[in-house]
Length: 90
Image (cartoon, one colour):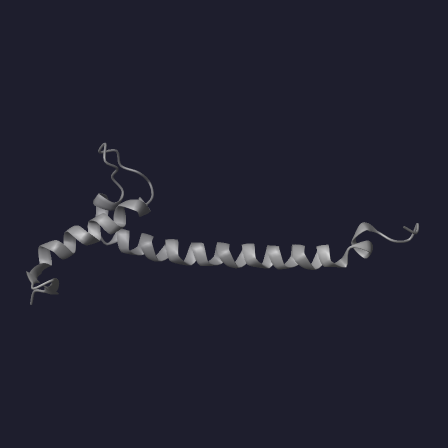
């Protein structure tokens, strides 16, 4: 290795791989934030139920893992079974 060269000059594929990894990580983070935002928005529609854990403690933010349960319960109240599926009641 010459005195003027750096480690990145000797391994350009490593720099490219690192950039690709960083781009992928950044995209993953943006996607996660977007979908978490959607789940939180839905959770806020349920009020305190989305902020309250199973022990009854109220939290500052929506408990995302609880949102599917809240949606399922709301839909069960509004649906009636027909055959093998369900149809929303009118």
